[in-house]
Image (cartoon, rainbow over all chains, first blue to last red):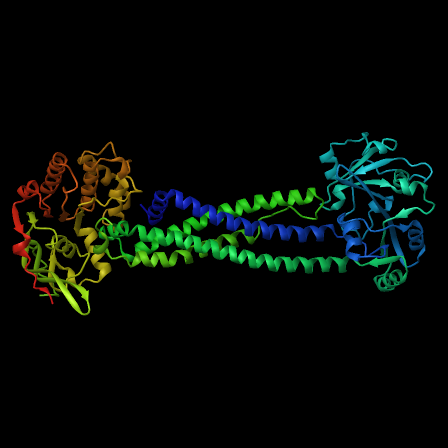
Length: 395
Length: 241
């Protein structure tokens, strides 16, 4: 028999207590792992989903709302701007690309995004161009003759089970304007996976207000200047306009990260308390066990076990419980984070569910085992100091 | 007499255990001491079966604990198998006890989470006398000899009291120690079981010429000894001081 076998048998002998302690450690570790992974996933999701466009021009208001709505499809849609804004930007010699975007209603929770083919164009500066996995892009249709064609994001196609050629509409009042699926996009890991892309004329015709309006509405225009040095002037100029604002997505993203950092700091304090509570629980369990097992420890000593052997057995028990709890916590934490990411993504949140093995897992595991050893140290010393003669008789 | 080693290196000692001027006192607080044991001289010849009788509190268990080295005397010399154990540092005393002394407790003191086989192997794990590869076979063999061949995987709670004490006896014999100490080995058993267990216990000790020291107030146990000592005569404590 090895000391580890002896420690394991002792733990089996206190099965319920050992199991409950392992669960408590597992829950604590799982909470930490899930929180770390989810906050990291959200941050990663924001980075992955960030636009390559340097400027977003929209209606006056909050730049955060504008970026969150246009890029990440979160938050309420800001007020509209006239189509002329896009035309003006397109004519601007400092602008390389201007892409109009109009946010519509939703079909089964997936938002309509009206735009032009330029949205999908593989410009050389794009980190990843949107590619079709099936079908073709929607046609460029004239405002008077909308084609009512739709290109689905990868998640939309998967969740709604709509296929090429399917016609769909949301609500009876839209039955007059059914959309036909003409294409499905490859998964990009961004908010585009959860969007239904249609042409602007189709959108204007489907929208009751836009249908009759003389000035066709847009939500925003994505702008890429020819030179980076033109960006400040473009930004300032459009902000000086009475009806529009120009938001820098990178600045908004930084603000969001700062906010996330603050949340992470608060979470770190909460998780710190969790660590202390779990360590205390393990300490109390091991201390009680060492106290209740004085006779067994005295017996082992009478059989020739040295004090350091007893110390090692109790420490091994503590480390084994911590290791088991840690392992369960890491696995459970990953499961919870995956589930959380899935739920968050389902609700349109920017989150990357790719939880690859990294230094995080072994680091947390090692930290939990060290914490287990520390929590078991005092009980181990108590066991170490158990007097044999005094404790051999039935207690 | 404290310190030094009795006997010679070339010839094995005639006595398995020798006590000279051994005293054991416990503190009562406020600087006062209670002298629980004072043995002027006690020698247990090799392969003898000595039974010590005495009333509760007469110092029987204290005597066993001192010989086993689980507690140290206030004064005097205790030589076991030619080794003066009172001067050994604690770790050396633990190793010596594991290899040289088998201890049978009144309440069996089996570890509840371990099977009968594991309880016996435990003693060998701590002593490291029997090679690890041989420990399981040795434990099986001992338990088989004590009639527990079919109960190897049972935990103490699944065994009768007689079976538990047999496991405890097997455990005491695990490291093949020349000296066996037994503290009221039959006190927790009914008369018939006690008789059976005692017979098995004495047999295995006699077969291998082990020295046996039993403390008991049981007449059946007393009759089994080839030497009978009375604690009242052996122990002459001076009382509180």
